[in-house]
Length: 379
Image (tube, rainbow, N blue to C red; front, top):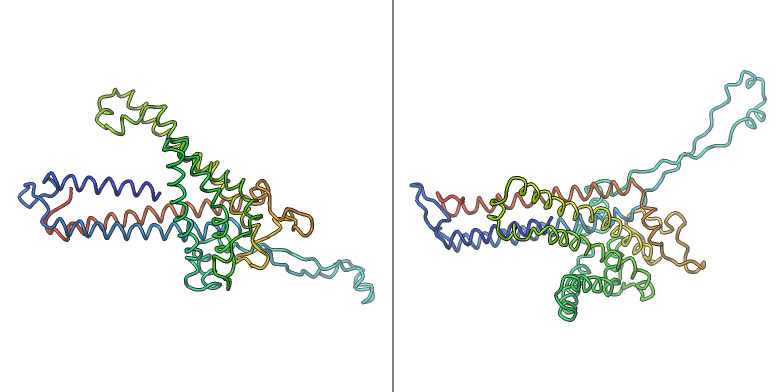
């Protein structure tokens, strides 16, 4: 969503600049075209608004799409046990029995387990919980690690792109290699997010090299899945020869009605291929990676939400001869359908918030232009 919004804002700014240069950007009360009265003020206002929009959208993505989503992926709902005492027998002969005999005829007390509502069932309850556990800045927990990861990721990716070349396949290969190289740093972010506050600085909590080796495969699978969301639609885009219509929209108008329908269906197929890849490939790969990373959380760290380290008995500690990490298959299988639905609902809410935020800032930008230029109206 942020990528789409960025593209639309860029197109809008480019169009605005072009209209201003051509002198046909605004219109006065007499209907004649006039240039902007305060072009530099308008440009400054739009730049400030764009920066604020970027930070607002980034905050939504980090807090909801990063912190809350990760906690949703690893939370294990707890169950509360209630002791249920059996009622006395309604048998007609019961009154004739002695107290000891009555006691012997009663069944043993039963334990009734009732699952509690997951903390991550709502965004509000999740934020309230982590703030109560880790303070008012808990919603941005792990931000330092995230900034360090993205900074190093950018430098390493650019370096590998220069070495491997800028072809599409080689760029995807460079992205996968970068993700694998930085897998320990990414796992560190997950551990900081899902654990209670620690006295150690984040850079002193780096996972061991042995732990890093255990997440190479799930990290590579996740990185390949991420690239598939780009590569598959891009390949179909080229196969359907849609580039000409997007670079030259007037060419679309020259087509017959049947040809236009074919182009629209091809465009829809490209879009649906990206959505299908994200849902069927990236979604499971992302959940699996986070849960594998969480299974390697050091014993000295407690989780900030209920979390079954054994994954239903699937994980055996290394001291007991086990691997000490959940397998990729078990990581996904133990993420039940209720949790999957909860995560999908969260992503839908994030999308809605991002769209609402973008619309709000677009309206704000239009309002600023009209206020600064008085009677001039953007069209």
